[in-house]
Image (tube, rainbow, N blue to C red; front, side):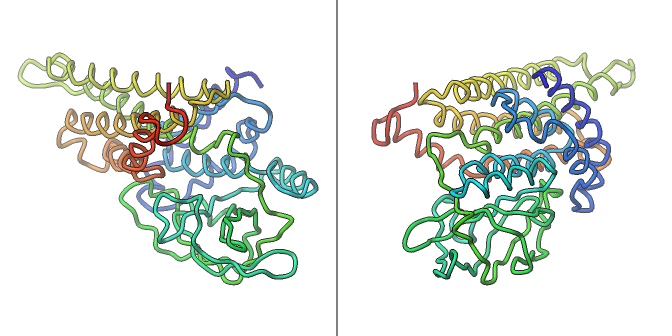
Length: 361
């Protein structure tokens, strides 16, 4: 499928997601209708089929305009799937790719309650057994983990970090604690692993030179939220009429200034995300730095644009009958996702000063 057709397919799913987004946010339920539709869509295997990272990012932003929670879960699913070919056993890699193509859902269970942003540096110790290791511990913020058939997880194995693709079997239990401010439909529950098998045949041989789908995609989540918020602001400014002249809100200069600022912030975030994705496609050495910069700028843009749109709508925007209050809450999640702004600035600053590998261009 061409890039244009993939984007058109994303627009189709966006409409489906938007119809139920408020309901899922209110009830803290996962968009199962979106999952069903995606499992039968060419979007779901686009990365494995050779889609560019730029197209992938644009698809993410379109889905996020409809429902940022679903776009986030799908990104985690895609991030796990992108690792399938890193399995040490070729037979397992082929089997898991076939499972993915058949519509099996994959979750990302890497975060630990005490690990902070260091999700690639597990602290929990696994014990050696025949055929692999067994792990007892908890993994937090597992977006979509309840409906996943397989999970990417990690542990310290013989003193070294180990990453595995595991079955979500009876040894894995979800704890019902998810009641967050935003991204409520992700169902990012806490998972408890009790003597869960980490098979040697399912170990991942990670290649640090390969692109990380989640790092590429996260800026586009915030961009999608920002696009949705700005779209709401423009629509509201045109429809809201002020007495006594019955003029549209859009004729007020401060509203025009506000929308102009939104557009500028959004374009800056989108341009950096495009540059980041293009650099990833071209495998340039500065692509990891650009991914971090793109996320940081997009996170800031989403919060600023959503907040400005809420201010523009006034009391009407504060009501749950309007989607802007959800956009504000969802936008706030961006800086909380790894890597946080503090970690990002630390890494970028060290790189620019020559203290951590080659500096970004």
